[in-house]
Each structure stands twice: as C-alpha cells, then as structure tokens.
Length: 501
Ligand SMILES: NC(=O)C1=CN([C@@H]2O[C@H](COP(=O)(O)OP(=O)(O)OC[C@H]3O[C@@H](n4cnc5c(N)ncnc54)[C@H](O)[C@@H]3O)[C@@H](O)[C@H]2O)C=CC1
Ligand SMILES: O=c1[nH]c(=O)c2[nH+]cn([C@@H]3O[C@H](COP(=O)(O)O)[C@@H](O)[C@H]3O)c2[nH]1
Ligand SMILES: [K+]
Image (cartoon, rainbow, N blue to C red):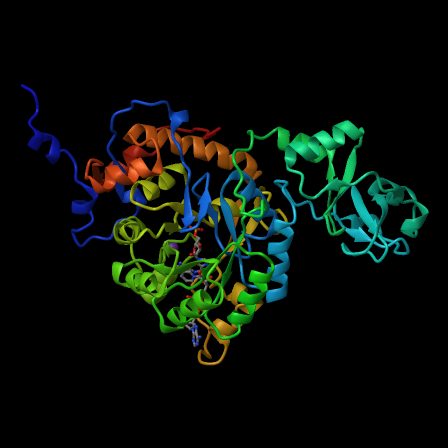
C-alpha cells in the first residue's frame, strides 16, 4: 500500500513545528532529512547576499576579531567570493589602513614585505622571513621606488651594511589592478622572479614573486571574487556604539569600506538604534549590518531602524562565555531559524554568527534560513589570520581570542568595558589557540564542495531553493538524542585518522 500524505507529513517535523516547542536547539541537536537528488552536486549554486546590496559567490564571512580579520584575510576572502569584516580593536586610522590595504590589490594574498630606505642597514632578521624587501626613497610605500633588497645578499654581507651597497635595480612594476592570472602572466612574459606591485597613483603596494604564483596555483582554482562597483575587492569593517565610533565610521567610509557591522553582543540597545539612525543618515550608500540578535523582537527593532543585514548569535561562539556569565542567549539553530523566519520576509539577509566547527554546521545554518555564516575559530588557524604560528605540545597553533576576553579588552576595546560607566571588568570570552589549517584559499573551496554535497542530499540546488523548502515545510528535520549524536559521529574504532581532503 502506498503511504498516505499524512504518513509522509508525520515523518519528521517542519522547522516551524520543531522550533516552537520551548527548547533551544543548536546545530548538533538537529539533523536534516534527505530529499530528492535530481541535480549533480557541482550544479549547486551557493551565491548569496551578505547584506541588502552586497552579493557574494560563497556564503562565508570572516569575524570581526583581531585574531581573524585583517588585510590578508580580507583579500583572501574577497578573492574566494566571500567577505571579511575588519575588526575595530585598534585605532581608527589603523583599521582604515587595513581596509585600504586589502582594497588596493586584486591578488588573493598580502605579503607585507618590509620597506627600507637606501641608507638603512637592516639585519637579516629585519627581512621578517621574506626573501625580498622593497627599497623606496624614504623607506615608505608613498615615496619613489628605487630598488629591491634581497635577504640572501643582506645575510652574505656579514655585519649590517647600507641597503644602497647591495640593492638591485627595481624590475618593471606590475599594476596593482592586476588579478592573479594577469600578475602571473606579467612575471612569465617579463621573465622575472619578482616584481613590485604599484598603484596608478604611484604607491608601492607589495611585491609579487614566482613563489607566490606557485603557491596559489597549488590551491583549487579561484571562483568569482567579491568586487564592488569600482572593480575593487569588497571589504567590510566593524564599529562600536560609542560617540567616538562616529569618527571611526567616517575614516572607514573614506577608506572605501563597502559595509559596516555594528559589533555588539546584544544589539537591541538604544546605543545601537542611535548609531543606525546616524549612519543611515550620513552614509546611506554603505550597507549597515546590525546585531547581534537572537529573537524576532530584537531583530524587528533593528530592521525598523533601517539595517541592511542582521548578525545572529549570542553565546554560540567557541571562545564565548556570555551564556555562562550573563545567562542570556539562545541555542544557535533556534536563533537562526527564528530571526531568519522574520528577516527573510523583510528582505534582510541573516548572518549566522558563531558555532561553526565543520561543513555540516554551515549546511544547517543555511538550511535554517541564514544567507551566510560568520566564522572565527574556523578561520583563525589559517595562514591568512593575523599572528604567527607557535608550537604547543608539539602542535603548530595560532592564538585565537574572544573580543570580550580580558586580553583583547585591555588591548583596545577598553572604552567599552573599562571606560566611563563600567569600572569592574568581567570577561565574556577566553584566550585560546587553534590548530594550523593552512591557507583559506585551500580549505574554503573544499569546505564549499562539502556544503554543496549537503545541499544535494537534502534536495536544494541553491540557497533560494533551500529557503523555499524551509518555508514550504518540505524540508523535514528532527532532534537527535545524545545517542543519535554519538552514532552520527565516529564511534567504536580503536584508532582512526581523520583526513577530510
Ligand atoms: N556574539 C556574542 O555572543 C558575543 C560577542 N562578543 C563580542 O565581544 C565584543 C564586545 O561586545 P559587547 O560587550 O557586547 O560590546 P558593547 O560595546 O556592545 O557593550 C559593552 C557595554 O557598553 C555599553 N555601551 C555600548 N554603547 C554605549 C554608549 N554609547 N554609552 C554607554 N554605554 C554603552 C553596553 O550597554 C554594554 O554594557 C564584540 O566584538 C562582540 O562581538 C561578546 C560577547 C558575546
Ligand atoms: O561571548 C563572546 N565573547 C567574546 O569574547 C567573543 N568574541 C567574539 N565572539 C563571538 O564569537 C563569534 C565567533 O565564534 P566562532 O569561533 O565559534 O566562530 C564572533 O563572530 C562573535 O560573535 C565572542 N563572544
Ligand atoms: K560558547
């Protein structure tokens, strides 16, 4: 006998029913039911929107955290088709210069080679591990390019000698507007090992080498980058809700920032509402993302005030102790579903922020209505994250810290915690370390392929179709018991090696 439509409807829950039981669920609690596969995984289209007017070709956003998003992450994420939000735990002019640096190139990397003047006498250590340094008249990026210093030459000269004694003449410069393929072709055509990258205005931006070309070629082929109307990388940045953040905002807009994220754990505040009104009035051309929110009521206030995007998540981050310290927050799966169920009707994209440990979490966030995921720990161990690798118990790691940790607060965000009204500092985050993951240019494409396979399994060929399945209640899900979660993981083996790609 064929199953009745009631039997089919009873087989699993719709999201609407699952998330209205008074239980806060997170990604690991829920599991999606498979749908019908009638398209290949490669046909899944993950293009999406970060905010009302900023489109992306992959749904990935790097967190505004000082151990995640600076210029190298911003250039890499934009070249992959995602976006990074440059953190605000630094002076406004430094944050603006990070935005400018990422937007000054079309290459997927920032190599930050040192600059020297001809009269300076650097030691080999001053090359900071780079094979080359750029020599300009005054030793800065804005003065005239005069040559290139080779680290091996500096090392062979014994005691530090003036750069002018051993620098080599600068080869022909490559244009800063070259994308990776153009820059690679330039080096090949000119028969060069390296070339300075110079902007139309004459600013020396960086140095590209054949080693860089080989490294990038060893990664999966780059997809469609995230570019603004001016043809430059799209870069976002965060601000706070203090009076002096208005000045920060102005500097970021002058640096060409494409979108602003108002960074707060509890976005439904008079401070944020005032900042939204101010920013919308002063800079209507820049998309504004509000947050963080986890309920429809919070979201409604920000949408009414005019935000172009919502950041969802309170206490879900890996370094985050807000739920412990403040007892306020929500399970991330419930938060994403609830806020998106309202925001999608308002044409406001939702960023699912925090709690992403692997590709399945990304699939769930998007299936529950998010347009993008924002990631901190997932990206912090990458080559592109700020900071140097260290060794801990034999593992190569990078530091990763919460922006509400005592260490981060005393570095830059003191005003918000330690300033005027709040005299006692209470941390809402920790300082930790994450494993070396190599380049985002390698592991993000593999992660996106895994997400496409997840979409294929539940029967969605695009984000739009995933959201249609959700709203029409065609997507079925269930809660997993603790035992079901154990069963869904690796179990019963004496030992194993987990290698994903
Ligand atoms: N997503 C999450 O679950 C969480 C994220 N974080 C991260 O930590 C960092 C700090 O977050 P928050 O502590 O929420 O920062 P926040 O700046 O929003 O709030 C800090 C304190 O300053 C107050 N405040 C804000 N603007 C003010 C103004 N104009 N005048 C007077 N008082 C004002 C707030 O009410 C609050 O008591 C952010 O990077 C945030 O993303 C921290 C905790 C949780
Ligand atoms: O409670 C918190 N205390 C903190 O110190 C903190 N710092 C960042 N965040 C939030 O965590 C997100 C990143 O989370 P993941 O590492 O899980 O990707 C980020 O995107 C933030 O939303 C914090 N939350
Ligand atoms: K947490």
